[in-house]
Structure formats: C-alpha cells, structure tokens
Image 1: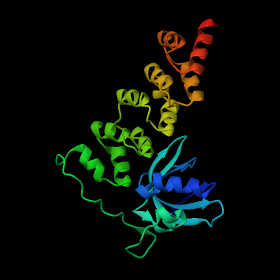
Image 2 (image 1 turned 120 degrees about the vertical axis):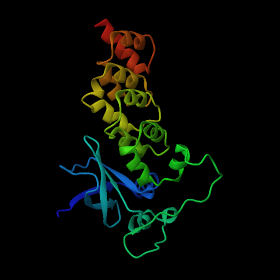
Image 3 (image 1 turned 30 degrees about the vertical axis):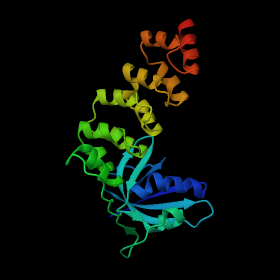
Image 4 (image 1 turned 45 degrees about the vertical axis):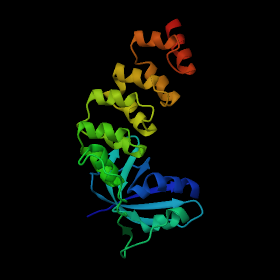
Length: 246
C-alpha cells in the first residue's frame, strides 16, 4: 500500500509552538495548502515537519479530512513525542511506551454535572475525538463544536455531510468562526452563492475584507442598501454606496 507524503513548514520556533499548543497537543493538525488526490479519511500519511533552524521531523499520521482550497487535516494517535520535544519546555511529554506516539493523559476529575449531557461529553473528549464528532455528529453536536474554543475544529463541522443550509447560515454569523471555515463557506459552490449566507458573511466582523467585498456582489439589493446606510465596516459601506451610485 502506498503511503502519501506531506510537508508542513514553520518559519520560526514560536510559530511552531503556537501550532503545537492549539492543534498538535490536542491530537491533530491542519496542514494548510496541502493536497492529496483521492485521499480518504483514515488513510495513512507520512508527515515531515520542518521548523526554521531545526532538523526536519518525520512521523506517521492519518487523514481526518481533505478540505478543498484549504488543506488536509491529519490526526495523531496521541501526542507525538518528537514534536513535543521540538516544541520545547512547556510542551514536553513524558512517553509511557516505546515508539513515536504516546497516549494523552486522562483528564482530571471535575465538579459533577448532569450525567450524559452534551457539554460534559465534549469537555472529556480529546481533540481527535472532537474532530471525528465534528465530521459525523448530530445537529446539536455540530452547533456545540462551532462554539468550542479550539477554532481548528470548525472546518470539520463544515465538512460534515449532514450539515444543513440553515446551520451554515448560523455559522456565517458567528464572530468566533475560524478564518479557514469562513473561507470554505465563501468558496463553496452552493453556500458561497446563497444571498442570505453572503449577507451574513459581509456583516460578520471577522470575515476578511477581500472576501467580504467579493460576497458583497451577491447580496440582495435590500441588503446592499442597508449596508450602504452604515450596516457594516467602513470599507464595505463605501463599496456598497459605490455600487448603488453606479
């Protein structure tokens, strides 16, 4: 069986440490810009991690999802010791078994809450488990994960084949939605041409201005007039007024 190879590069140790804390230490990583043809979830990949000024690190991973135009999400079976060592001090992991990967530590006991509640289940999940839930979970689970503090999970919710148009519309309004998820919505063949979703993205203060300006061409005339009256950021207000004047 052929194992695909991918590379991820970091320009500095601080940049890598930020990725380690936000994603790798939680069991996964989004390799932005990577492309894998016909890759399926669960497929093995050989990942090479390069940090400026340090020797490359090679390790195994599995594909969690391929996000067209964004990259490939991979997951690890625990926290890779080699990457923890590369991250340095605050990211050190003590291996319990020989090999490249180690299991994550069990969570500390917390104050009791309602048994079986969605909130409690999510609190106990690892990053990898949340990633898998985002890809296959129910409507309520998708909504909860979109409000998770780890924004790397948002893309996986968008990849869930059961996500509805109304859910995407609600997500497009969220100021905490990750930039990658926003871009995916904008680039989606159906979502990115839906007038209501486009309006939500234009009004979302976290949508990058270039993307918001592109979406401005797709909002209804009534919405364009409302934006021109001051219903968005200055650059968008001026653009809306220019379109109406033209």
